[in-house]
Image (cartoon, rainbow, N blue to C red; front, top):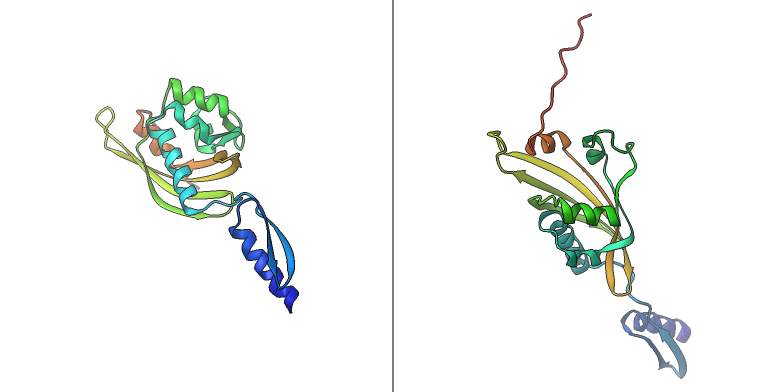
Length: 189
């Protein structure tokens, strides 16, 4: 019984301890080693999602710290909009190309988070929308999408490792001044 009491106490202490310490329990010396936090908490999630929104709506170079060295952005919604773009299912941006794109031709998207979650130790999902102002006399267009982020902790900073985003690409194309020709009626039998 004493062993289980000591084991329980050591496990609880290790969750709260910082660094390495030795505790005495029922005459036993128990060494407790705390590992760095490996899972996201709500404040981490909020910080990463806020950084993502700023990356798309108001880019500045201070946001680079949120991008992992192995960062990849994958979106078939974007790939379909790029003439002769990459095959579906392949990344559209790596870290360097994402930074270059945001620095030279920032998206400045008015992104609003509709629903946050679920999230786990290293993944965050959310639903967002962006409503574009009238372009060329057209109605305002609302684009809605889903983003899934995989993150990794590097030293003391959570960073986005992969970004998967899908959205209503037809509305996006119309919102930025593009056009779409609907298909004709189906052939009659």
